[in-house]
Image (tube, rainbow, N blue to C red; front, side, top):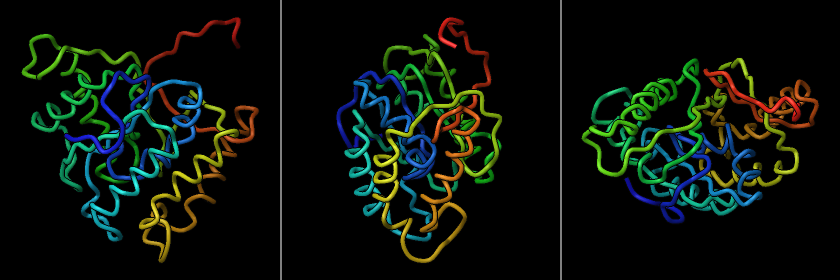
Length: 235
């Protein structure tokens, strides 16, 4: 693993991205909101996106650095696992557990296990094993054991049963600029429903849908597998 932006430090939120740009698309507004509020937040790319049709790892890393600056991230890292080969192996889980012990996030956001891309649902299962491993005192993992307080799933291309909505209307210009920083992916011909110049328009429509349910204009959606304890006076 190596750092691409900022310095390693304890983080409030860390978003795992199977490929460069995944975190911005699914959780960039929330990261921008947290950063604006003074919270240290970060992104960890699991692969360099070397298998993608457009761009190359060097170009995509430079785009990640610019997006990190726009979002106000405290840290961004690159794990360097194989693009197209993310899976729940002991070796990959150990590599991710080392990273988790390094930046000690309170909340970890990961791709949803129902997403269609093998690297996205692979990242979910890998994260579950790594979270467990990072917390074990006797695990063969460098660093001090660290227990994640909350694991959330963010939306890729599949529908999710969202039970957490974050109002990101104020962060929408920042979110859009961070997504568009990935120029190699979102200009030129459309490669898929995600790698397309229409990505901002499509995602804004989805965010408006969630906003309607949340009585806001634009929301990002997350799903927690565990119940959340809330202050009833805050509802």
